[in-house]
Length: 487
Image 1 (cartoon, rainbow, N blue to C red):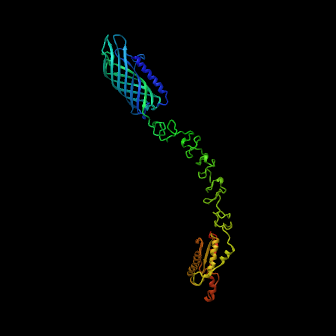
Image 2: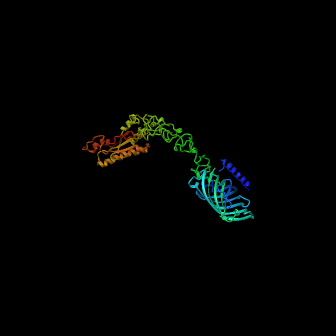
């Protein structure tokens, strides 16, 4: 029997060596809760015939199988099954050879659950177990051969061990337990204390099942600091995406994985800290804006300083491709200062053209009205048509239409009459198609600005001709800034 058990022990140690050398295999954890242990088991007897405890040359080998279940970081529960032998042969008159099998329920206190890390290489533990033992013993007592005695008895054990973790799924262990039994007849002697044994176990443990790995990166969730890593992303031993340059931006999101950068620039360097990566920055040493490809725009006109030929353009002014104020009519006066931006003019007139001689002459003409009337007479319609033509020639100028009355009547009446005469002229001009009628401004001056002074002591008949000169509408054309003689 001893020879067979020695062979089993040798095979167990060979298995330990081969499995521990394999890096492809994955000790019991919260991820893999079921653990199977296969081991060689040796018993040392202590009874009436002798005490084999602590004698290394008195080992009787067998084997065993444990099925353990993870309960918490501190405790495992298990079913422990062993089969082995014990013997004592000191004389021909007193000796025994027993075959012993045990089945026990065990509770293990793991010092590597709280005191040490769960995945530490060395994991000490304590355990207790209770159950039964089946025995078949051949014994000689006092020179008398006893018949083969088969019996079942209660048994319990307690001990300590060390687990050696090779990977997430494979471990080795060695442990020693003190086993007490409910019988004293293992050795064929019936007069002393119940027989006791040291049980030494050494073997391998295998975690069954696979660890939970939500993101499928090869790192179990229990050890994964980044459990939501996208599929296919290369990770480190902590389960987090690789960050080659250590800038906090993982390689799979880093557009410059070998250069230290910032999250704002997707992992690329940004020397001027303007939020535009150097690789995309046209001015990498000057803080700018993304809209300007990393270059500054001092006047905020939408043209980057390196291309801006007018870098001090006032805010809000429309500019051309060179950053200079627009000059649509090409008269040298920028639109922001040009009162007539659509008509070429002169700087002296702030971009507006000078009035030609014909227009100036027209501005001297007057439209006369009948006494106490505000109706435009047909004889003046040709004059007004010429003014319409002049307004078309100067589409951005303003025309002041000034109405007047003679002194006959009250001041209030004459004021209203002069305003009506100016409005009548405006209405005719609009009827004739004047563009942008808002530039036609009317004012009434009543009797306050007579063209001809009249002696009011004379009769109306004698002053009719002079008064007719004062019943009029005059004109004034000027630039759009309303620089008109309104008073």
